[in-house]
Image 1 (cartoon, one colour):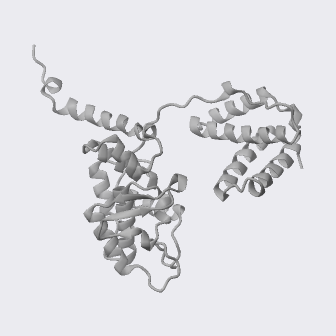
Image 2: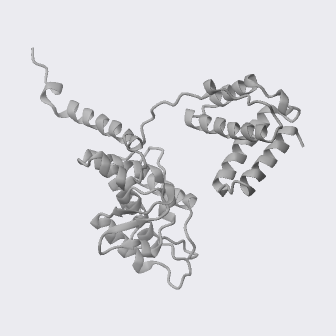
Image 3: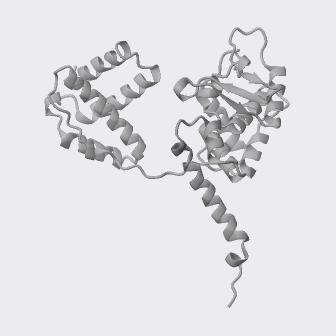
Length: 298
């Protein structure tokens, strides 16, 4: 086993056993470090990895078209690895410099227009149990603006259809929050509960035909099918419906603090990205509608 591969293996064991890292974190670390190890090659010793090695690695990632955010994450993984190697007295110093952090551009979220979300909501065949369930899923993602991970973790006791709200228990930071539901969304969930599989031990709200909890992968897969059926030509994922919810709230006059609370953002700075999207929409409307933009007067 190459030195770098052995170091990666021990680092992952440390993260799992000593730091109690989650499965997702371990998977992310393993993927990032395998890419780095493959780049270096099997004959590279730990002591020979220097700043130039890391810069060449980042240049390679950039040439593959990776986003700045992905590159920053992979660099953070390396920083964690080399920090641990220093703590273990394997290395004296890290080859990673502060100046290596790729600059993050301000990328606006992809979202659906009102017409597009309407078409998407109509895509499921609501004459079938699966279509009724999928319509409720899309309604909930869009209406409540919740993360797909929060959706799959919704339990039966988290729904208050009379009060038209959801209790979100699995948001970032493990803080509960109450999210309001639109009338149509509450009705969609109510219709789904009529066809939800009975006699199941899983308390999850949304279940597969095998009476098991849906996964985020399953949600994104079914959504992809409905996006195609609705004739929407955008890179849409479940998270895009969260962006759509926030954008439509702001365009409809909601204040930033309210949107922050609904989305469960710990910092309002995270929510502010949607003001850029909303402002862009306002500019388009203005240019189309205002007389001074459409009329030329000599």
